[in-house]
Length: 227
Image (tube, rainbow, N blue to C red; front, side):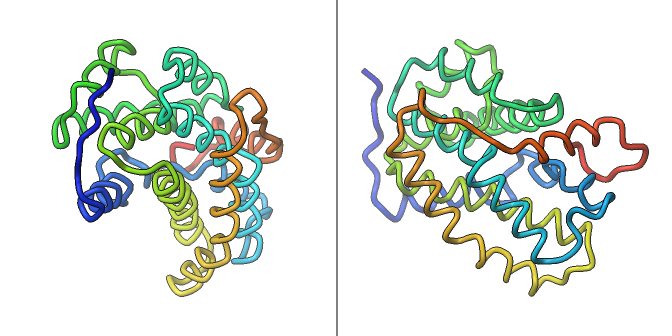
């Protein structure tokens, strides 16, 4: 039986905010999730099109898939099965790298700064190779963080990171970036509920244009981002 830390609500919030902060060293800032190519061909060009792109990623793409994987890992489902799904639920090589590289960095950093035997066991079992949502799900569970809080914070971080990429790639200011974050609030909340309440084998994604842009980005001549 996995030991769950008994911590206060304030401590749980502190840990969750730390792990999903832009300052946590997982390299999230270096991934655009295909937005860089979408900007290059004019699919994303202003706040409205950026919000549409990210909302689709949250509701129907990697946001939904990641949230479902996080929920399964938090519940303690078969971790090998969940980890294999996490590796296969990606539409391109860059998106697979995005999930695995951040997951490895998250797991290594969290084991060092916020240790728990379950994280050591996960690293040993998966040889340090685990997708980000799986690592976050396990860490949240053993540190006594509720599933609802973990899902909302994870999806907020996912969406906010893509907004940040959009701000850097398009002529948007910081205020418009925050307006985009506001516009994505309902999508984050709805997707968190769906991931929490839907069995993993009933989850699917439909983000073909995002996948296509990610595939095209792999051979883009000049680029700022890794995806």
